[in-house]
Image (cartoon, rainbow, N blue to C red; front, side, top):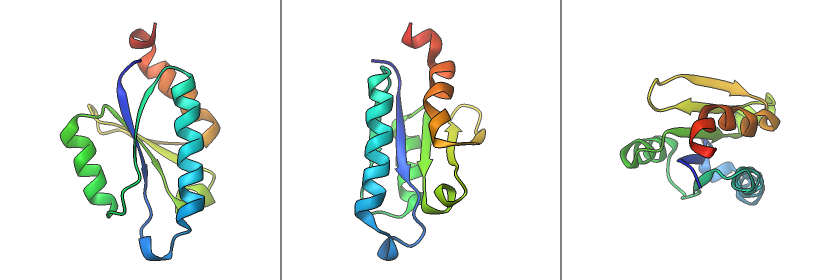
Length: 108
């Protein structure tokens, strides 16, 4: 498999979230990406988003996919490129295609 990236649930109020529903959305995205040959590190710990982002940076995940309640309500998830700091908002259906473009040379 190729580079690892991190899927992180960006829930601002963890005590109010529907954890089971969040985990299903994250799991579906993880399975789809792994089918395409992309390593996934799913951070589903019950920690604040900042802790998760910091840890993803510390272990060197080149891409972070942020799946959160607010973004999903808008029909978007975020893709952050660690090297440039660029954050792109995409529909969930487009994230796999975009990551394949970014990781193309590594996946082939």
